[in-house]
Length: 154
Image 1 (cartoon, one colour):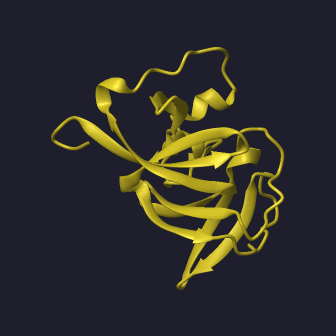
Image 2: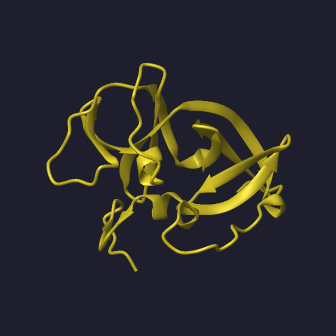
């Protein structure tokens, strides 16, 4: 968070929905490249890619949100993020914008029921008449007993 009480996010789309990730978590944005599948992983784990010598797991965000697997094409984008001490990629349809949001303008996510995509959200914000759902990367990358950051899930 900046000293003036605002935060910057990279917004991106999955279908008709727009999401945002804290710009400080982003390490790189790159075009889609095929990943190597790993055995015994959930359907939303697309596999891994070699990013300048580092093996980076790729998560299909549409599938993580129970929307079915993304039919990955050249126009799709991988956003490489830092989650805890690890690096991972999220597969999205397109990067939309860099948005600056006053922290006071971030609204809480209404609790409808658990197990929904809303469990992965840190808040909601309206930007130029569009609703942008802000991701909680720690929750997105929490898998069962252990999350991607290597920490035991609470």
